[in-house]
Image (cartoon, rainbow, N blue to C red; front, side, top):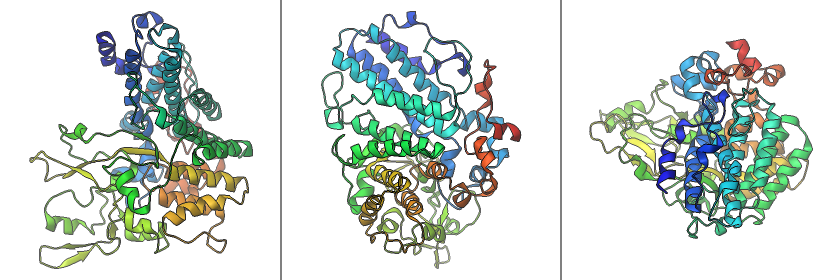
Length: 519
């Protein structure tokens, strides 16, 4: 066990191929590993720790998916597709590198390619860990295709050959291939670790999370190609989850949704896949700025950037874009039906919240205060507490939940002109205490499903991808997004530019055409 732990200390130094600026390890490196299931589990856990970045990386989509009308000055350029924000070297180094994603792919390939070295482990348990690696690999490829579009498909973990990009559709097919190899996994209830104990973490893949991933992969393919076959497959995988064929999942009540799913209770049958987040991880950290893991959390700290109540009152209506915020009018526009229970559950005293000023009077803030993540971690360093009291969210980071899958299936069915699409939409509307959708409402059914996803999944990181998949960028995005032509989109305008680091030592790498013209 000691040798595998020593190796894991150096995992951040390794990655997949020469075109990611590192030297790959050869097969000799691993001849003394994988001698027990516990070593294999430890290796996989290193992959799991990297999945935090794969699921919630801070690429430009993250800032746009905040879905707010008052982003801070430093983020405003991302929401407006400003090349001067996307292309500077410091931005590319921090926010547009795919190295972390390919590191996950490399580590997964190490497990898959070294299966013949596994010792003292049954065939069933070998298959379990291989399937976990296949899921992580599929997730990484899916996210790369969503964020960057055309991208390399890694060769073996030992390859040192330079490699160019493959079309986004081929990257998605590679993701689907890996995900299908993980369909042998049990349901969540059947997950066990190397010691035979039940796995309670939903960060490990299970049959439902694999089917959910496949539903999203094929839906994304459908959005790229408008091929109904892809929508049909996406609908089928979503149905497997919704009908309980991949485990028992159910919607929370509207009252329990926030505390159980987005709160510190961390216990819900609605959650399908999430990243574990232990509040103890923050105990020794001294943050100056709030570190959001989901886009909507960027709205949490405002105006609570101080403990001075009079200063908070002054900040409450400050229109300067020093901090991220969203107006009450924008929330009213998104949640247009006054009876929508999510106005009450996701937002705090919407439109009525008052602050006491230093002169004794009161001010009603024109900005909305998000309450979807209401269990926060408070700064304990007394020297910093005046600058930023809120430093984290005491909750797991939810990536997929049942409501997402239901609405994704609704979109698939609407694309296929199936009348039962409205049944899925109404299931989410009823949970929000709304009446059933009818044709007299202002949008057609597909647009209404998109709007419902925007309301239900607000701030969870899906908004930008929903916009792109549906082709609604001119209607819902700002600035240069509204000026894009179809040719701009084909040239990669809706994807993140390839980071400059990807070109090191790789003569075959190319920039997306749209961004190449902007450089």
